Image (cartoon, rainbow, N blue to C red; front, side, top):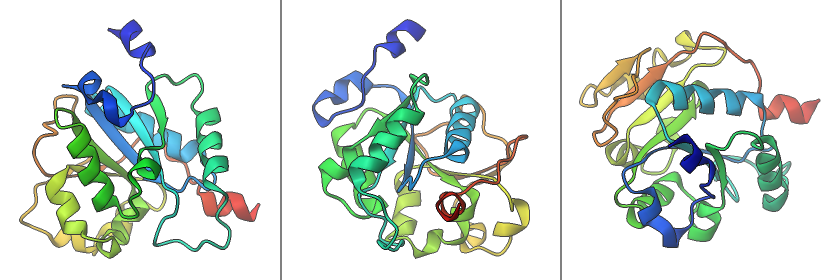
Length: 207
C-alpha cells in the first residue's frame, strides 16, 4: 500500500474515483511563504488522524489578508512544491485556483462535489480558532467537514473565550484524535502536539 501511495500524483477534478475511500487532510492557506510550522501541523494531523494524504490548498488570495505583501500565486505554489519534496503524502494543490473560489466554504463544497467518496478533515493552526468566526459561512463549514485546530504558541489560553468553544451543539474533542476518528461526522478537534514551533509567515517576511 505504501508503494501505491508513492505513485499518486496531485488531485485533479477528473480523477475523483482514484481517491475513493481515502482519508484526506485539507491544509489551506496563502503560504506566503510556506514554512516548517505548516509542515509540522500537516504531519501531526496525518499521524494523529491516520490520514492517507494532506492536500495543501494554496489560495490565490485570502480574503482576510492584505494584498500588499502577497507574493504571486505561482511563486507561492512553487515554494510549497519545493518544500514538500521528499514527503510523498504531502501534496501541493491548485484545486482552489481551478475552482475559482475565494472562500473556504465554497472550496470545501466544490471538493465534496468532485470527490464525493473521499473523507475530508480541514486543518488549521490554533491561531485560526480565534478568527474562525470571521470566515464566510463558518458555521456551515463545521457542518460540512470535521475541523481540527492544532496548537502552536500561544496554545491553550488563546482559545478559551473564542466562539467555537461556546458552540455546545457541536461535538468537541480535546487533545486526542485517533487514527480511527470518523471523518464522516461533524466535530471540532483541539490538538496539541508535544513539539511546538513558534513560526509564522509574517515573522519570516519581516526577517
